[in-house]
Length: 192
Image: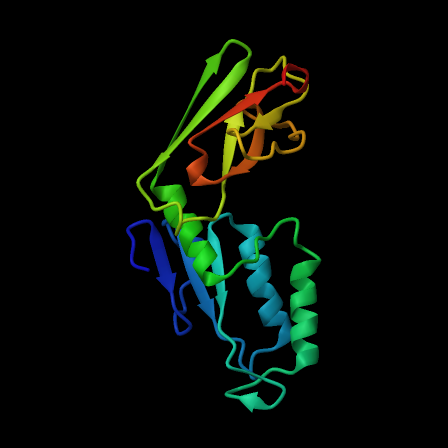
């Protein structure tokens, strides 16, 4: 997936993914039988310590079948380690991660306050039938808001109340939208 914003570190690479200056790092690791569980878990920990590392695991066998197979018990332990951290990880297929990155890079997002509502416009030339993974948007809301809800275009269900969060720039909400949405609205809960 060559792209100017992506650093691809294949299995043989000795470079540390956290040292890359690219926006995204595709970090491929091969958990063969000679790799201990602590090393495998450290790969997950490395992803948790950075916000741009895409860990691609390449297994070639399980329970004695295939090349350098891991046991089912080892996989259960490893995936259990990830499951315990699922609030901070996104586990997805190679195709979905690729789609998400391209959607994020190829989509224009703008927002404007209209009366007491924030109108967010999403525009992309990507084919929404192919690029169907929702992207996560971050929108700042007025400091006076105590709650927020997302209103989607007609025919799509509204999401539940959004959680207000804070950073050094103010109050914001995170929410997922599909490219085909075109326009969504954010409002205080009592406004919709």
